[in-house]
Image (cartoon, rainbow, N blue to C red):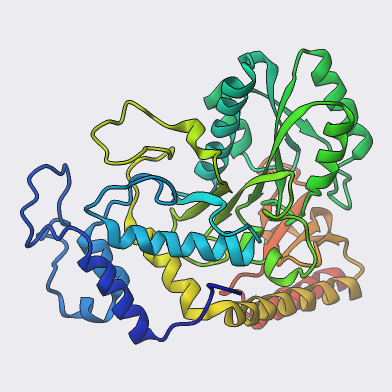
Length: 412
């Protein structure tokens, strides 16, 4: 790891104070032109004593706007301190975790995985149009049937067609034969350009797609494509505990990645990350945003600088080895649950590098589904799967209680 280290609380405090001092201070600076200000003093006091020991809350009160993309070109001068914090976050993620070459990435802290996924699809749609003069009806989004709902949402917003690839019921792996059939069918419909979304930890199963399989078939069929990785859930766990993987930015076929900090990283909700290889994000430049210093290259526009600080604090509170230790504990709890299910001959799916266990619904009585708040694959009458996610709040005692009640149900 080149950039991911561990900072003490005092080091974090000093670093964030330094960043905020480089930003405009709405309390003391004369700044007449900004359509924003400090948070309302009637509700958010800027001199509350507890703020001294809470750099994240201080950043919320200071209200920095990290509008724009700070890995390319110039940015709003008024918030240069928190912009640098954001760049440090992206550097750890792109270089240390996702194996991108130095200075060969762009990205930003988004509002979540949905925005980041749509950002990727937006970029590639525009790229195909500008570089290849593609027509709208010649572009299609391609992803598995287990993909997040942000893919059809993005297709709707961008006015693009979408094709879903079936997966094996038990392994949740993409069906290769069906994948090729779908690509051939789409080509027969006139599709020439494919925006592929490959999953690194699906929402329901935690399954991981093989992006190289997509690439192999698309190359065989002589198509033009870009591959985006939706690692909204798996981005902070799968690459950390998987030594040999090509699901990262060192893979020539992968162009961008989504990660959610408000899932595994436990940042406040509304905190995701978008990363892409250098030169791609320019395809969504909004030239009309002339009052913004620099280039508006993001879907959301104005963004809370405090979100970048939250991610920075978590990453640098643990460091690479501390984070590995944390997720190792979660994976041990996950394995314990799987061992108990095996003993009970209960069928389930679990990717060995992930902390999601998805159980066949027929094995779990409804009263336990309600009591333990298990998540179904559908909220219709007859779900096929029920999901347990081993997050930080899920203690071994909770799992023991669930297994004991499940045993009682089976034996009676």
